[in-house]
Amino acid sequence: LQLARENTWGYTRILGELRKLGITLSKQTVKVILKENGIDPTSSRGEGSWDEFLSLHSQTLWQCDFLSKPMWTAKGLVDLYFLVFLHLGTRRIWLSPCTHKPDSAWVVQQGRNFLQHAEDVELPVEIVMRDNDGKYPAQFDEVLKSSGAKIKRNTPWSPNLRAHVERVIQTLKQEVLDHFVIVAERHLNYLIRNAMAWYNQERPHSARDYLPPACEKPPDSQVSLKMSEVVCTTRLGGLLKSYSRRAA
Image (cartoon, rainbow, N blue to C red; front, side):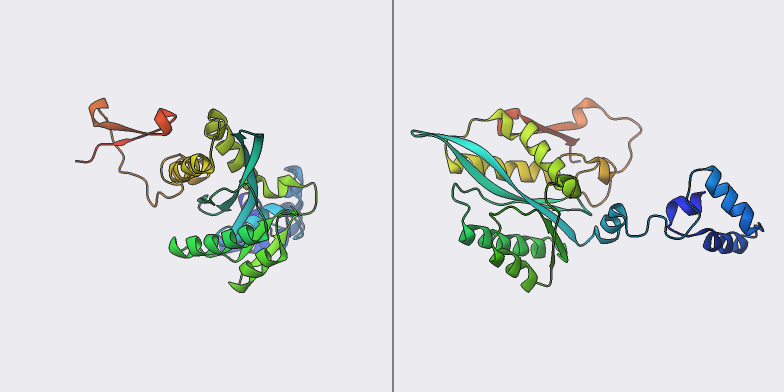
């Protein structure tokens, strides 16, 4: 059952692995065991699934989407837009500066800035997943393709296909943006920079074994820890808090 759940093998392939382990069973017995536990005994099980695709390409796959936040002006509310890029393998994010006019020139420039960032942090870009938002010009795709990346556009009305970046957007809204009334582009850009640093370097993530995305290795285990050894780091007036051990 473990071999079946960890792979997409059919019952004959599983039978071979069992015999390598010194376990001799008949083909029919393996098929019966799999069926009794609700597992398809054929090799087609799981082949080409969406989860499999994401798992295979997670180290080179990015998802992106637009995020907007209203800004108060003398003439009323104006939407500010910025781009969110998520690296699926590490869960690191890159957030572009904001603009009230996300025209083709601006979007293309953010594509170039993203590629430069990915190079700086040494994260490969082979696949970029995006939706069919009309704000993406053809030149945006060309910029990414020129670096060797492939563009994978999801089918309309299917946000679940980019569920990871959608979840990041929800976090940014609920834990940061919803707490502020924006009065200037510079104001939102300040929040964006702090949110990106906090998310990558300080916020624990369940997919990273509850360590921040940029954390390369867990800290040494401690049997006991005094509160005097704990340092609280704050951002955005205390809204975002992070705790770490005081340096020796």
